[in-house]
Length: 462
Image (tube, rainbow, N blue to C red; front, side, top):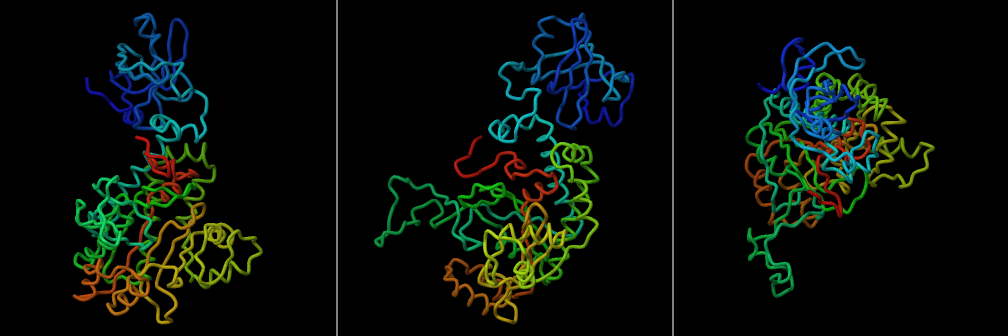
């Protein structure tokens, strides 16, 4: 008999049919004569109840079935007489695939703290909360590809190992095969990378943007979706050292086009989640964040506020808030400033534009005032910055001047500069942090709880 997923059984139940389900025991209760076993196979947040007449089964088998066990059950699907479920399975055969010692199994019937579940991250997939989170994460990944495919974008695979630093921040993980106990040196004491695997200094990528621009300036509209890495020693609920980024790059888009796409994109993803992840979202709304569904629908129903960085600074300076970090033109906005704008002042998402060029990356298009660039940040409640982007500088002379002002290695960016020398074109793009999106959509409060295997300072389990 072919296995049927529990989700399918519950959506289209065929009462009176014989079925085979396989999954993990969430709970087991009953008495000497009858056992009620709640089984979950991960396809849905809902369990299916298995009713077993103990007289039909080996006594030792029934004793060995406990929370965490993995079993296969054959039986008849019938209407349930109990509360909480419409159908149940009257078991005729039960096979025990894997025992689970009830005394030592970490996931007991009681509730567990998020910190406890992070310490047992290898098993947290089996909880209702993390099952819901990772099903939603899958749905969002699928929706991202669906959205861009419908828009005619091309999915571009940019390299994970790279010789460029998109952000110019230098906080990168180095890639080498050299013997760390005997690193070859040049006469001036610097590392001789010519002997390394790639013959040059290489790192794990912080962004696929620069390579993505190469694709956009030929294919028109592309997007990347893959892992990125930052060697920042940050232990906050908002930072990871390995995370996923979605980075579209579009030829012939100006900053307004860029903002339009960003707003449409995130609204599409939220709408997709509400339409396709309803049960998981309702569970998270009840158990994690009781304002989750209201907030998601509110974002869908309202236009994002659009304003300049300069206007935002004036609002922040005029407020009566006590800031941990002082506000001033030319300073980068901190999370407390971003969240004030979206949660207290406007009470909806905000897109800030036209930042001082001194606090933004070299590739952003300069405005005519010579002080600001055509950058944009999308700010969300509870998150702060969720998207960062800009119109890119297409003018070769302005770009090379900015690279030199920032004392960046011009020789390492020859390929990037070539796109401005040969058929340059206006273009724009942005990056959306996937985990920050999942934080918002699920209502979870810590970014380590929306990625299967979090990578943070001093933590690289599994």
